[in-house]
Amino acid sequence: MSEYAAVREVVIPELPNYYRGKVRENYDLADGRRIIIATDRLSAFDRAIACIPLKGQVLTQMARFWFERTADICPNHVLAYPDPNVVVGQKLDILPVEVVVRGYLAGTTATSVLTMYKRGQRDIYGVHFPDGLRDNEILPQAILTPTTKAFDGGHDEPLSPQEIVEKGILAKSQWDKVADYALALFARGQALARERGLILVDTKYEFGTDPQGRILLADEIHTPDSSRYWFAKSYPERFEKGEKPESFDKDFVRNWVAARCDPYKEPIPAIPDTLIEQTTQVYVHAFETVTGQAFQPPAVGEDPVARIRGNLAQFF
Image 1 (cartoon, helix red, strand yellow):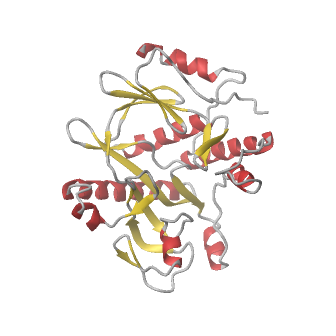
Image 2 (cartoon, rainbow, N blue to C red):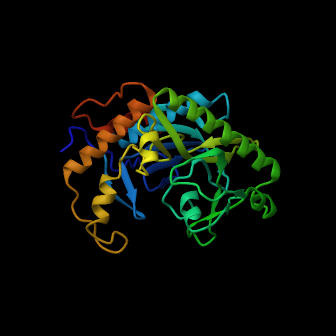
Image 3 (cartoon, helix red, strand yellow):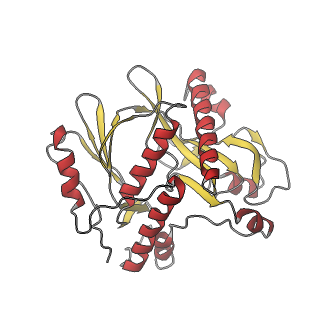
């Protein structure tokens, strides 16, 4: 068992307007602020399948690292960090477009450029791709691959920038601002990752508008859950050999479950503690490698939920 207690849920009755997400607890205050608590829940197969101790703290603190290093490029929703697992942000109206920036021909999902390219598509997200590209090859320049959710709550739908404007999903001025922000954020992320011996391959951004109509960066930025990182040193040799690039492999639990059941239809079997601990170690290693900082874990034996509640008492 891990020496650190997992944050499974944080229900605080004294706080108003509770909303439970897949991995976060949210409370909306009357003054327009939102309290976002990152739990250690691991979401996969459309449900929470495990808790990974320290995961919530790692993701909150890594996002903080990046928010602070990109605030000169794009304003963000952050107002305060009252606890290692908590961010207090400005509540935003989230724009109905999720923006993914890609620097390489990579990915495994149905909306990834590599998947679409291998299906024979050459005009993808409004960009023309030549024949002869290889898996995980660097693109001539970073590209935007926006998607929007289907109206029935189904899968993400690929969009071109032209479609976003023509369909009235965003005004042209809004899309132009989002596109400029996303490409500039990605360029900053790639540059800082390069200094750490990493390649920032692709990432997703979520933007929203405040009551004044300003576009702000929301959610998280450049974390292992929203971004793909490869190790720069081994990339050239692995690419030449046609091998998968070396990355932060944190999918032990997902892969273990998928190999033993149909996780969309069958009960999840008991997950070994060793896999949980391995995944915690990967998250901590990712934090320290990306930021260059030592991770500061809680005290062994500390009750993290009691700590979070105490740090949020000021908002009761």
